Image 1 (cartoon, rainbow, N blue to C red):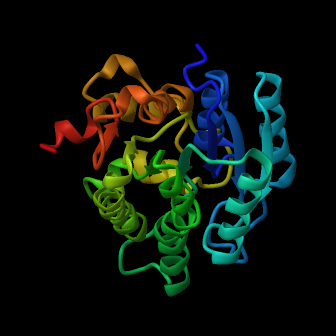
Image 2: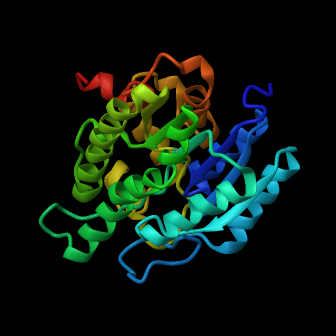
Image 3: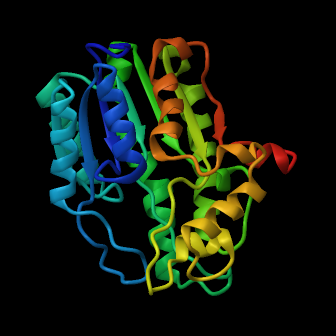
Length: 281
């Protein structure tokens, strides 16, 4: 406990899901947390609904309930001005950022040749450009202090391709390349830079409308939670694990954010119950 006591973390895409789980886990170990999210729907209806300000503020309240301080910042990671404002708000409120988790991401579902230009651009901008912009405005401060932990969220799709997610797969491969470039350049400043590559997390909620996220994994538009469990059992090396939930995968971020990982930099860590290993990765 209190492994991150006195540290300050910035987590993007933190209003819900994996980002929220990361923020709460880091807070449970004593870190003050800036939680950031776009907190509004995109202009395109080709993507699933984003979170909202209420959920973002709720995550900040959950962090405070654990004891540490929290700041909620609405920011679009594809906007340089938003990312600069986010970094400045973090520094103004807490004086430093020790841990950066560039987690914001998005995807859409289609065959590679069927994506629209808009879908391609938005997916790559959020997942890849957004990771770069998020780091761009935080890293200089870390260089000044000669300390920092930068963690990018890539994906198993950043290591091995799978169908129906071409722009997402391309962007997440790019995140790993970006991470390695940052790691090489920031090593002399005692800053570690790594990426985690999670598998699918959580379970689908049964609805009457097709869910493209789970459909791409299971193979048809409306999988039930049981069907998703069965598909995951076939995909994962450790079948007894079932579907990893967000907090379980967030443990990898905690390790990379801690000083226990101080000798690890430039690595893409699969957190996937063996999915990549099973495919020879």
